[in-house]
Image 1 (cartoon, rainbow, N blue to C red):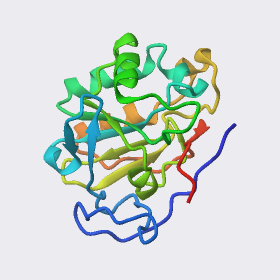
Image 2: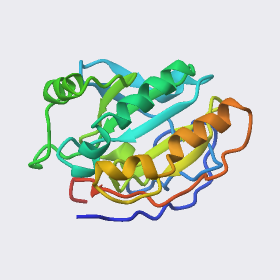
Image 3: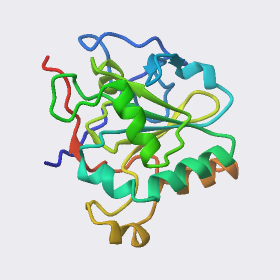
Length: 206
């Protein structure tokens, strides 16, 4: 099942405190990224604002999704290595509710990432969905980039071809790679918003 997200517009102060879902407004490109703290798959807290001074790529992840599996045939791992080589940070975030058939416990998710030879800076658990909802993450993989200054500079799809076919990867424009290259060159991100595609995030019922 595919769902295409609409990114809501909100004015947020630098690394604004994450609000509860009932009162939160979705993050907006060009505004400060909402700060958050999540536990990684080893049970250690990770705070977004601890990485200020470095660009941060955030990837919404669900190993049960064929669109995620498409990009974990090597494309996502290559991007993770490229971002690390540029001095950036990669946070893989899983907002799947814990009663979903797609849910993996922290140790299981960590093991899956290791089996894929993935190298995110951290893999984070968001079972209550608060962080995903704050960023209006609607699908997996939904991608975001936060600048070294803490500003959300990209939100959308990983690339320009909305399919689950691995053979489409070389033909697509990779928006994350393009944005990171522009950031490294000191240029504005030319495609700051795009349509995300993939499987719907399995959030807890409201």
